[in-house]
Length: 167
Image (cartoon, rainbow, N blue to C red; front, side, top):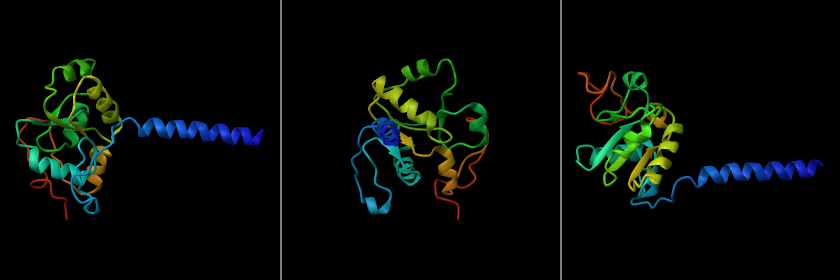
């Protein structure tokens, strides 16, 4: 009986792990992974990888930094240059459907839970170039990267210039 319980538990744990691991497509590195800044073709990005992407693409017309948190969360701190679509809005899917699928997106939320679902939804809707900030803005802040305080579109300055981590 005990052995059957252990085997059953192992099967359940394996299923949970595998289901979480296959949600995103495999990623291909494009630089030295020892630096921790290798940029995959799409999928999860570490905060450092996100900085590399933001510094190279933020001002490009084919790139969108998409914050999918609530307005209150955004006002408390967001990445400079972000636009917002509230994940909890009844029209979230409709708003995603209206976005240009040919653009490159970096999506983020508080901890990465909402972006996992949004990432899969965007794949389902035909988006092909979507990045997901691993750990969300919580991990971004934990690693010392700057945020802007205040509502999007209002007059405010980021805590520090650019995306360099605070010293």
